[in-house]
Image (cartoon, rainbow, N blue to C red; front, side, top):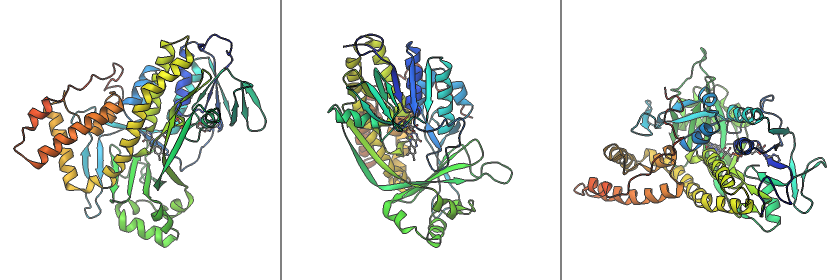
Length: 457
Ligand SMILES: Cc1cc2nc3c(=O)[nH]c(=O)nc-3n(C[C@H](O)[C@H](O)[C@H](O)COP(=O)(O)OP(=O)(O)OC[C@H]3O[C@@H](n4cnc5c(N)ncnc54)[C@H](O)[C@@H]3O)c2cc1C
């Protein structure tokens, strides 16, 4: 087996895809002393308008913050994030929205961040290493492992030694690995889609809704969410069954739908119908892959390895946490690349599976749970128990968003906690505090998980 820096198959290191995973990985590889070429099919987003309709902002949480601290870009990230303290729930029959805080501690907030601005920070940091060359407009078509060349559209070829597939959910690196029999994958499509809209700023440029909350309009079968941007606007996303989108074909149908379901939102957006008709409708799926590497020649990161539905706001956080794990495995086994790749998958695959399932569950919690009094009471009890026993219990949402314990551990702990909450809700005489302190202690946070890394005011 060969390492990244020596051996018969040594050749240029190629990262394909300059999203969060590819840009971050390039920085880590450069920090290990390697020269890297980063190939990206699209133009440089720092110099081009990438256009509306493709998840303009994202929720950043602890697992994503840690690698950003690690590679030294957190101060720049801090300048562009907006903290969100909880879900601001807009009920259909109540004109006053209600804030449901995410946690009982000050730092338990998530952060709205522009995808473009975050990627730009990572690309700048990659270039600043002096070891990463970025080629924009380079769309990979296929990987020829026999000839050790990457084939791009237009007929261009480039030699490679090792290729890192960070080319997103539809990865062509993954397809090439599947062609070698190394990787199997399957995408389970949801029968729900999404569409992004923009809630513009008020006439004086300020936000029309409280920017420090994730706004949620839960409507059981579907929901609307809104995250603030520093520019005074909100990125708003409608998630709904495919059939609902299918019925919204006329101007009147769209107007009527928004006015009856999301009236307080609809009145704030004068060109709502035009936006709805102009913006694309996106599909939602979970891509599960087995075999994230091909010998010591190729490995997958980010959505290329594990694409999940966006309902836990974790796809990017998961992607960046996985990149950091890969960096660690590469450093631990510098002379056994194939082994490092396999150990990376062994570590991360159970976690990717766990968050994929929890993300699917969270759709139900957001669109239906938030308007179910029993569910809301259960969540309040979990938060109260966390306040009383912070070393032993943390609600599932909080373990996913504000801890660095493996996702699979968060899922398993949550299952035990769920039994305990069910028992306590069914019988007030149950010694719930006794049951909680009998739970194993929660693991410590990663040392880089500084709760004050990002401003929360
Ligand atoms: C509606 C929606 C909302 C989301 N909200 C959140 C959220 O709040 N929080 C969160 O953590 N995650 C969220 N996600 C998930 C998140 O966007 C992804 O998990 C994350 O962006 C994955 O990063 P990546 O770098 O692996 O892939 P990508 O960001 O998809 O990057 C892949 C890159 O590869 C390039 N590329 C693709 N094919 C080729 C090719 N053939 N040749 C060269 N380059 C190529 C692409 O142009 C792109 O730049 C959301 C996703 C969606 C759809």
